[in-house]
Length: 246
Image (cartoon, rainbow, N blue to C red; front, side):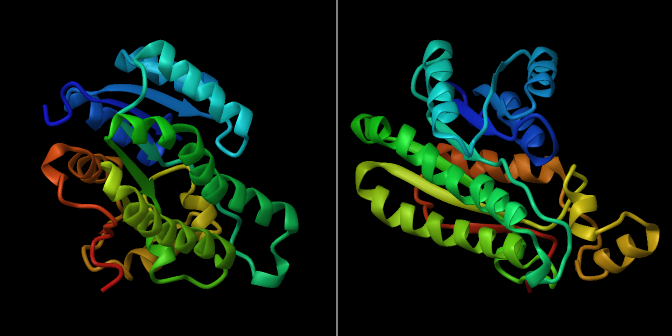
């Protein structure tokens, strides 16, 4: 029950890593709001787990403000915000990625962190506490070919995490990140281009522990970094990658 008495918003929480974080937070005693662009999936999971849900487009300011209002109605100002929502483009040569795909990746992976910060940080400052967790990627540490602009967006998130951490530490707000390797999530096929046994084997050969990151792995790491046990940790970008970045 390391998160007992805490309240949390998890963006992209209806599936994949986000759902793993939601499940772990609930098991650790937190009240959770699942925020997802797939409102039906968010509502279905929330009903299953007994928590709240909110339809939100994290790249849109009005929608993020709506998320804040929903949270206020449900449990007030959240103690924890997990910026997990993310998208990628299909593996392509960097000059062949469309401008529309580029704009979408930057809007969902980067602008969303800016928008949630602008929306929630002022009141967190006034309260003098808060934990923000950004879900980045090993792609921002050790980029793979043909995912150039996705790699860049996750590198941006890692730098943003450190910049936010050093600025917000004096007012009691901690900011950390997780860097997972690819996992069994809706984005896996997009990362690999296609999902075949041969491509999986090639991908897994680059991970020393020999498996993908799981939602449970992410939930365990997220719960620790957002708990009071990690009260002296800020600006950390924890690799949950089975040794991929060694």
